Image (cartoon, rainbow, N blue to C red; front, side, top):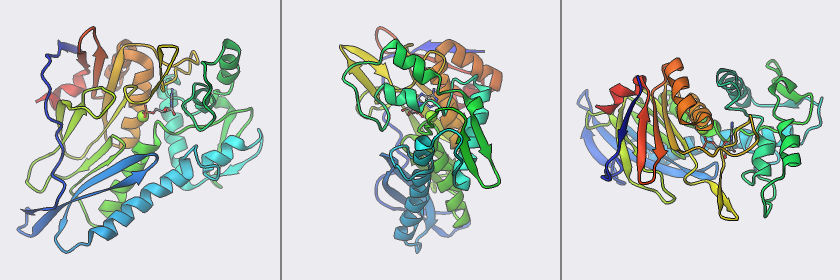
Length: 345
Ligand code: AMP
Ligand code: MG
């Protein structure tokens, strides 16, 4: 069942997980547990980690571990780095195999699966279109592309033209194509940080990379981690809803921070691979919960492409917890899937 409610004009303070300095708490087994807040920059955005750890663990080491983990994802999958796996693939001629890292192989597999599940609403081969509309590493045109350019770019999005050799591992295209993992790499990086923290013996943390979140265990105060769903607006807004999370991931997709305006018209950075045009529906933000951040990230983008009606139908079919904010004359309409209902308490 889909529920809809008109949101009143009341906003709630964004549920930051903790203050910016370390606090002492008593852990479950009586040891002193410190909430450490770490942050840095990656993938053109910022990361934040809140982690419960013993008082003597040096936070510099943890910061370095997290930064290295994220830098590795960026080095493999950034379309802004000519030497990344995707940078080399995007420049390669059709037919030429390009070696990739096991991580890029991993993300490619997930991206192709989500593309199939979503009828290519999520399409990692959208890079040429993304560039054409001024959201990629290419030069920004002063005007919007014409029909012929869009037609030509659309012909580069056929995923049956992508071949994967998982033993090398390597990728090649059979006809011109460029890949863009911007809609999934931040989620993947978030998961990779979670893996590294678990390996370091840490089991209570919240990882956030550019708005994609993964949580494990609980806050040292013995309560779930709290994450706010932001009110869509250009500058960082306040929370419109708050989620309590244990071992989960949550990602949001929207165009309220990344869009272009040409001749007074607004163009979203989310491209509909079926038409080659930026999406133009009234969906302001899509929030998806999933067991991993990489899936939450990919599904959030896919549902953003589908729009509110098809997006909610997809969420119901997949039993995905999804929360949508749809622009109204004033404020937003809230829509959510049945699987999201337990998170509203
Ligand atoms: P996100 O914020 O996770 O929704 O990712 C948005 C970014 O993904 C855009 O800036 C593009 O680089 C890329 N993108 C745009 N449209 C699509 C699409 N249909 N499928 C996959 N990636 C896309
Ligand atoms: Mg995404």
